[in-house]
Length: 399
Ligand SMILES: Cc1ncc(COP(=O)(O)O)c(C=O)c1O
Figure 1: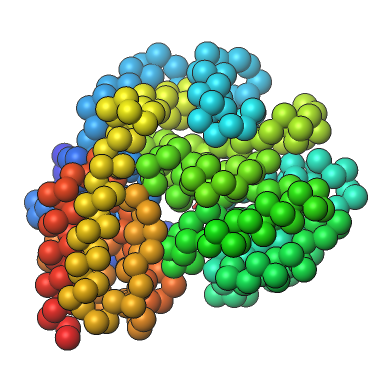
Figure 2: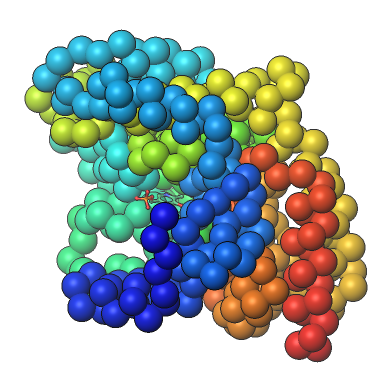
């Protein structure tokens, strides 16, 4: 493989790539398990996994073999024809989510778009309002952006779709007041990801369920970041006791191959007719094959698969992060579950990211003050020790 210098790569991108990303000064060329290797051969411990995507780590032998095999067999036919893998994947996702039908797409934002569209389709124009939460992030397309809270993302693209109300996630009474018989759907991340790894309270879960029961509003669960097994259950909605009618999945479910899915109850899906929605690539053979490998590897609770690994290492994460917090007064809060974790340092945490990179640890920062950890599902206790020791050293050095 040709190696590339930082200067070459930056030079080419600066000329012809749309400048919407602030990239770190590193060029990755190869990955192996939980490690990435840069163009100088230096190894890094990957605790961000391509923003929650590389669930099985890097260079996964079974995934690589399946992708190669699929590439030799058939990659794509479009949704004009049948192929054997969509129905198989949909059946497995239905069993795992408790929602009956899948629409396949290529990203999280597209899964959200499908949920927004079909929650309106269900109401046949009678209801158009969405209720979303402060600190929510649902994606960058116009519909997904409309239910995304942060004005930094929304501002430059106004006007967005109308009739969206945002509610404080710590205020169940405000939710009860906002949801009425004009509300098509409430949209919620069971753990808010980009918005600062924020868990929702049991009181808010009860308020959401009560508001849906009282008004008939549908519930859309955005499980794109916290779902697909990241917390030790396939969906975090199930852990919390949320009862979604629609659900968005993406990221980890493709283990690095782009795929998303909107899941619908039969009641909501019944409103869909041929031609209502579509995607050229959605659910092609390559993406479905990769996702089936992911599900095989994930397994179910007690099967000895990757899901059990998430459950096991999660307890170690709890212990090590609690000890880190006890040692560093700057840590004001620990949030998340399983292998989605937020460390809130109560002040701009931007400096932590390059300091950790310098020491060979990849993490990122969200919501200004939160260090976010989204490692692959295959991490071990030793990886957690290594990552927490690096964070310890980084925080120690500053204070
Ligand atoms: C909760 C949530 N919803 C939606 C999205 C959008 O997904 P994508 O970037 O694949 O469009 C993201 C991406 O970070 C997300 O975390």
